[in-house]
Length: 498
View 1: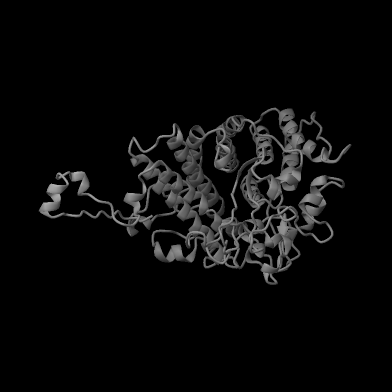
View 2: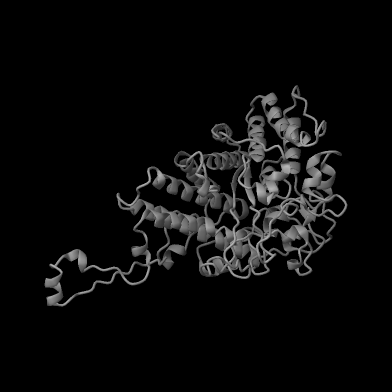
């Protein structure tokens, strides 16, 4: 798609004009190539435009020409570690010129601009373009969800990067100041609230994996809870509970391992996941924007299984803290990790490789119903809600785990008569650590709990044996604004400490 419209008007000779009855519609011809003006003429064109927003998420999850950026969100927490000196593991070396930081940031703003562009095009769509009832609203809902998800992630990672809600058409529009306070999170919540009212409960089989109302309500509740945690906003706890209560037809699947298996994608527990796929060649050395059937559409899990494509780089492994957090006999431990080698088993134990062997077709699960149940329990505890209800939600997650083993008794239910609110909150935090380990959630949790004084983050907390670790809470809770952004945008301010 081009950013500037091009129109070619062909003026015919007088004889030709007579032959064509001088009809003006036959004088205004489309060019012989596709541009923006000629592209958006049919319902399917808008559908392709929306799919293009989804597709850019590949750049967060792919092999990335032997430079995968997954360590940016997996390694800063206390569940996953390495035996090497990865910058995101030891914090100090993370600098504005870091390639992963730049890659994540750039991809996020491409997604935002694609979303802003599609919102503009949907607004301008001619009344007769859409023939499928409700599809235009669904497209708007998908677009808002993807922008909301991106701003939720940007707020968690960068805190104050620019807030852009209109399409960028000229260079001057890229000069933006930092978003103030929780503005990025506020925008995510606004987008997700509208999306939840536009999206369907489900799509047909051919469109399985597209965003649903459940996904929007789940992420909306999560974003509201995050804002409540850091801003002590009691109203947001209630709003989060209301969003979670709108989720229907979702459930915990009997087998915990199905949530990470390539043959059990988009199951009843998965509210939203990135749809990894394979082009004709799936060239993991090229981005998916390179050309049709050329770039990568797969994801990458080699950092967990120590695949040869790591080229000697230390794999991501479980911390000793994570290994010991599981009760003996908890079936989730052997699905999550190998306690002898500390290797992570999630996603790689039941993987399906793309044809090249490097890429994977196993979808990263971005939001699970188990996550939602524990978030809902937290909202109840923090808002002064009934503790027995919160404990019941935690026990749903624990019951699924022990029922995986016939006659299993571990993990046992938490006592429903507990009246100490702090104790119940500790149970929720422990359960999130165990249940969601290695799933792109831990670092976000730790940062918000730190801001709420629920945890104290320091070198000892991370259970790292690496003497080079130098965590500084005043600096390392946020990533730096990339050097390229600082160089090109004189109006932006770097995050503190960089």
